[in-house]
Each structure stands twice: as C-alpha cells, then as structure tokens.
Length: 454
Image (tube, rainbow, N blue to C red; front, side, top):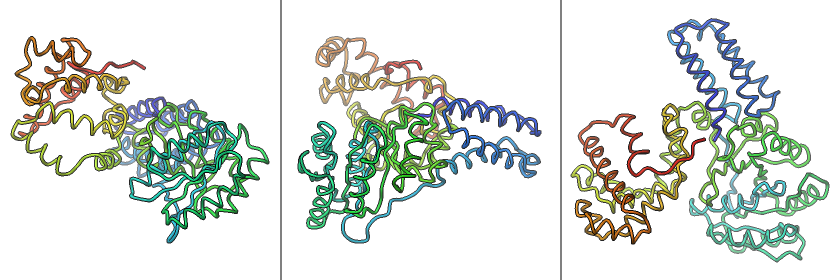
C-alpha cells in the first residue's frame, strides 16, 4: 500500500534528517523531491501545488531552521500536512438516535460497491449491530444474488424482491421492514453505471428521497487513480454525498486517489477496503495512514486488530507458558491462526515502526500458502509430538510429511524454526530484546514463506 510514494518520501526525509543544519536551499531541494514524489504517485497537480507551498512555508519558519534538530521538525511537519491532506484525524458516520441508521451506497459499476456493502455490514456486526441490506441494484446481472450470498457471509439480513421490481419501491419496502424488525442499520445497495448519467443520478435522488439516509457513501476504486478522483468530483457536483469508501487500497502502490479526494471534493475517506476477504475493511484514519507512508508504523491499528482477535485469558496463559518455557507447537498453531485473522502478514509488518528500513522484509511479498503448509504439517502430528518436538525423529518425520502432503525437508525446517523461536522467547522472558537480525531470521529463515520480489 502506497509503496512507491512511501519509498520516495522516506528517502527524501532521510537525507533531510542526516543534515545537522538546514538552509533554505536544502528545504527547496527537499520540496522538489516531495513534489516529484507526489506527482509520480498520481496526486492531483493542484493538490500538489497547494500542499508543497504550505509545507515550504512551515519548513522555512524560524522555529524549524533554528531548532536543534531541524530534520526531525521537517518530518513532523510533513507528517502533519499529509494527515491534514487526507482529512485530519478522521470522520464518523452520523448514527440514528432511534430506529435504523440508513446508509445509502453509491458508485459506478465495477467500483466494488456491492462487496463494500457486505464488508460494511460485517464492520457493524463486529459492533453487535443488527444489520440489514437492501438489494436495489436490479440491472447488473447477478448483483442481487451476489449481495444475498455476501450478506449471509457477513451475518446480515438481506431484503430483496428480485430484479423485476422498481429499485425505489424496494428501498422504501426495505426501510419499512427494517423499522418493523427493529434493525440497527440498513445499508442500501444502489445500481451503478459505467459512467455518470442522468438516469443514474435521477434514480439515486429518488431512492434518497424515499429513504432519507443518515449517510450517503460514495464507493470509488483506488486503483483507478485520478479517474477515481474525477468520479468523486462529478458525484459531488450532481449528488451530495457525505464520505468516501475507498476500495482496493491494498493494491494501490501510488496512493494518488487517497491523497487527492478530500482536497478535491471536500469529502473525507471514511472507510478503506484493504483485501479480498470480507474482514479486510477498516475505518480510515488519515493520521495513521500518514505515519505508515513515512515509515513510522501504525501501532494503534495493530493493537485494535489484535484486541479483536486475541482472547485476553489465552494471552495471559500464553505469557505464563513462555515464561516457563512450555510453549508448544499447538500453541504456535493457535497463535498463527489468530494472527492470520488480523489480515495479510505483509500488511501487519507495514504497521510496525521501522520495518520499512528492513529491506529483507520490506521487499518481500509473503506467500500465505506457505503458512497453510505449516498448518498442515502441525495438524499431521500427534498431540504428543506437538507438545514435545524432540520426539519427531526419522520415521515420524516421514509419516508427518506424507500426512501433510509435504516433504521431510519441510518438516525438518519447521522443527528447526520452532527451536529458534523458543530460544528467542526464553531470551525475551529474561528481559533481552531480539535484534533486528534475529527478527529478520525468524521472518525469513529456516521455514520461511516463499517471497516474490517486487
């Protein structure tokens, strides 16, 4: 996510930080690099011009140039301005005080709108909300069936009348049912078009009048760059919306759409879809995203993901096991499953501060199928073998390899990696933190997942 932009900005700011004193020419040189980085990231040129102008004015202030550590002051300013560019500290949905909160989803065909509806439903389900979806896209083939399938996966109720009914009438009927059944949230999936036209806007306006939504969210595809910003700008002119849902943000190496849409439309990004799974959907925090772009990590989001997946009692039990050197392969399997529920491993690594400087991990795209193989190997072991890997010798290794569809070499690698992990855990239990080299070895060492170099 934003790798191209992140690399350029981190390189530029690293050069700034290395200087003991900053002159005006140093600031000018840094601004040129930042301007180029943003333009190459497909950020709107007017946005770039305004952004760099503001940045330069702040960086040339006496409190920066005369400070003891001007480089760090510049980094701080860039971080603050990036966050401000994307919307500041973030925005919230308007939730109803009573009755269902109605959220109207709009967007062009192909933006991922129907999938975003189901992901948003899952987001509310995690908050113990009773959610319903209204299938009002009656034009696109199989759109209703797709929403029904994904809605069920999200644990939401789906109101649908097939493809022959009028979308406006479906929306009104769905709202009446949501009220009768005392749902907390109703998400209305509307039809999209290949382009913005009068029919699209007219129908959207009628559905809006019928349902009186608390929030209208525009779904845009981050991968389309400035086209996404153009779509958002056109929607803002023709139909008022409250915020943006940015889809496919995990595949956007440049970040131009995310960095431009707030400045161009005045509407904030409220949610971001960051993967193919229904769980890969989060609130968008501009300040945290700015920190990630600059290689500062995103510890708060990482903690929030961990809190959602990790049971507190299990965590305390695991802590005691590590202290007593009783950590087993079964414990390892349990923890690996919990971590994988938090999202792609490569995405979690990006949330760790300083991880961008570790090139071995930064340039690695971890193949999660290798983690599936690790799980298969452990599941092919007996409970006694998982508790005591020292039992796994000769014929046992061959049996485990055959049972998991792998080779003896893979079993050997896993056992070796597990031994290394236990050594590190013993050291940490005694108050000794592992070095970056040790962490890199654990992430890419003995039983290391295959990686695809970018």
